[in-house]
Every structure is written in structure tokens, then in C-alpha cells.
Image 1: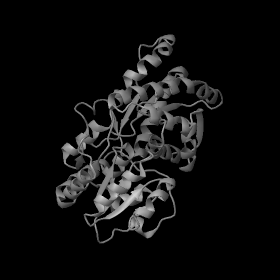
Image 2: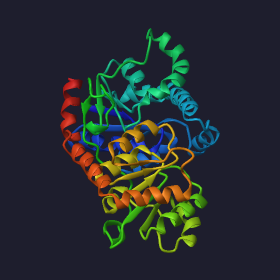
Image 3: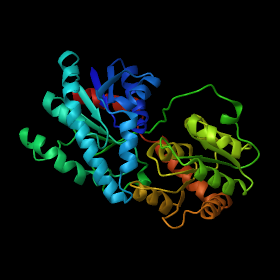
Image 4: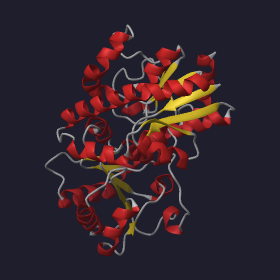
Length: 368
């Protein structure tokens, strides 16, 4: 069987879809992963076969994000428009591939409209695989107007529904009715690796706080202030950032571990993971059973609020995200073992879900 994955327009969906892609390839199936120019190196870096489907570069993405509205609702509309535009622009490259390498199944991300459009054209089943816990319906208003002429041309009223919908959310964090019609699957971490150093997998004698902004390019000064405030709690600080940002931070934080490290290795050694509400960071924290402290969240706020309501972390609302607020919230999590207990409960729920290898069997039945 040939399976085409089209996860999304950033590294995070690529990494989140990889476990199912590996499982399919391990079962003997052919796998190709499509992505915009920016993420093609990330696809190759984790050992999957990449296909460039649109000439959208990292500079293009940075320009878009730099000009994106600050308001989360407006930002979601803007993101929906750009994703829909890329979906339309990607169809020629995808059809060129299908002319020689026709997929039996197309797997797409939660808001990557390329996959269902291609599957409809080819007459093959489509699968929607969620890559995080954010409800992608918030992007639909922006995508609707962009996609409308193409959908009308195809005789469609809306983007076709998937033939199989795979969800990776722990049961207790789902919204009411979310499980209806969806196939649960255990989320497994995948990310580029580097040679390990002992500190990455060793837990020291002090609590460890991991700080990251995910794939974003954070303000180095904000990282320094945040880390200093947290360090005053007597904890060990690890800052996960790209090397070009790390070089600006290390001199101000000589006692911290600063730089890129594989989160799947580091997360289980942490006592708190402090981040911006990024989907893969959230899922890696959940799998490791580590409480989260979320600041500077945007479109993911509702998903992160469910985590906080469950008691597995804290969400700092706008206006309460000063350095002292962050340090106080971090101290609160460290002082109360209930946060860790709730985080571990979610980890156990995730571990009990069907594995990607089990879900491959469903893909095989669907393609037949």
C-alpha cells in the first residue's frame, strides 16, 4: 500500500505524524510525506521521504507570522486563509506525484486542506490525523472564502469529511462529544536527535524546570528574565532553543543548560515544563507526566485551559505574565504534588490508547 502524508506547514505537525508514518513503513507500506519547502529538511531529518508541494520558505513563514494579527481570533482567520491558499497551490505538485506514484490513502493534518482535496480528486480514502489538542475549527472562517471557488468548481459544498478521523487527545481532556466518530491513538514523540550528554537524561538533586518557545524565535531578553526569575526558586533551569538564540543567552545564564536538546529525552527528567502553549510541547509533557506552566498562549488557549482546569498545570492569562507572576506560578506547581499526580494520570491515559501499529491495521482495511 502507498500512503501519502500531508501533515501541515510547520515542523510540529511533521513530528507529530511521524509515529504513524514509521508504523506504516514498518508494516511494509510505502510512505511519502509532503510539505512546503520550509519543512522538507525536517521531514528528511527524521528519516522520512519528503516531497516539496509548495515553494513556501522559512522566510515567507517568518514574514507572515511577523505581520499576523495579535488578537487570537483574528490570527486564526489569517492562518486559515494562508493554509487554504497553500492547499490550492499544492495541488499541481501532488497530482504530478500521483501520476507516477498513486497513493492508496492520503493522511492529512487537522487544518491541512490539501489532503482531502487530493483524496477527492483521486477517489481514494482520506484520513485526518490530529497533531495536537487545539480545535482546528477556529481556522475554518478564514479558509472558507479562499476555498469556496475551488469547492464550487468540484461540485462540493464543503471540504470533504475524512473517512477516518484519528484523535490523540487523552480522554479526560476531550471536549464533550469529541470522541464521537473518532479513532483514538497513542501519541508518541518524534523529533530530530543529537548526541546525548549525561545531563539530558539524568535528574539532578534539584527540581528541573524546562523553558521553551517551541519552533518560534523567542526574544532572548525575555528568556533571560524568565529564567532568572525561575532560578531564584533554587531550581535547575534548562532552556530549549535553537543554537543562534542560545548563543545570545548563554553568557547571561552561565548555570543554565541552554540550547537545543531532544525533548523526548529531557521531558521525563523535568518537574515543570514552561512554554507558550505549543502543541507538540504540550503532548510531550503529557506523555512524560510532567505538569505544565503555559504563558503567551494564543489560539491554543482553550486547549491549555482544559489542562489547567484538570489540575495538571497552570495557565497564566494575559495581564498576569510578568516575570514575578511566572516565578510564583512555577513555585506553586513545585510545592503542590497534586499537579504532578494529575499530569501522571493523563500520561497513563495516553499509554492505554491504541498504538500507531494497531491503527495501521485500520488504514489497511480502509484502503481495501
